[in-house]
Image (cartoon, rainbow, N blue to C red):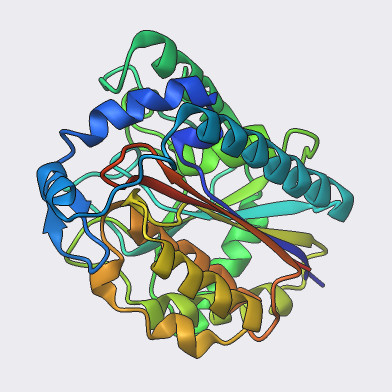
Length: 330
């Protein structure tokens, strides 16, 4: 019988795979980012944020960012150590796809990969920051070249069957149609390289469409999928020690501490209803990845977090940045 042994939540921002001095590259892109949303979930420009009257000069000082970078590494080391100690036979990664594997021609609301091998995408056709920043980030995401990831096809197929019986309609993906141009992205490569560095278990990638309208699952649906996924894991006759990881989030590209605190408080209390009540308006752009955490909270329903850390990073005085979150369920 399969059984849950551990759950993790981790941001996968470029801030977790690069050193603090490189964070300025993201600050530069923030100033021209057309996908910014303020603390109320309203679409805005960088200039709108500057005119809001809120300033984060102290928070974005280089000395503060360097201290935050040290905390990030400590939190990642802690999660990696817990995952290694749990000795999972398979790691189910709940992440989102940002036109790395899918595109506008086909964007499933939820899908599970059930092949034996998965290949990562590359950043070769993207222009994000200078070459040094791109190189470091690409390596941290395993997107510097096409990397093969070992997957547990048997367990994935078993989960799909149980989820369909539970009323969760999803896409089953057993191969990548165009591996030369498409592949698994940063949500998966980061987990394998950083959190699984001492864990040789295969993975099962679950992809949730957090980013792209019109078929983004609601918070309530995400939590229900998580509950059904737990049932599928517990119903599996396969002998597996299962780890589940929420990859992504928390708020970005404008750091929204009230939203992040709301999410973490709900996770700490184990109260799923609080997560289901989060307005969809607040789950836009990067903040949409909070849906991945809500799904994993459904897997560990009514089980409060054992540990969590939160690091609100402000890359600019206007408030752009990311709420970095790290969490452990056991």
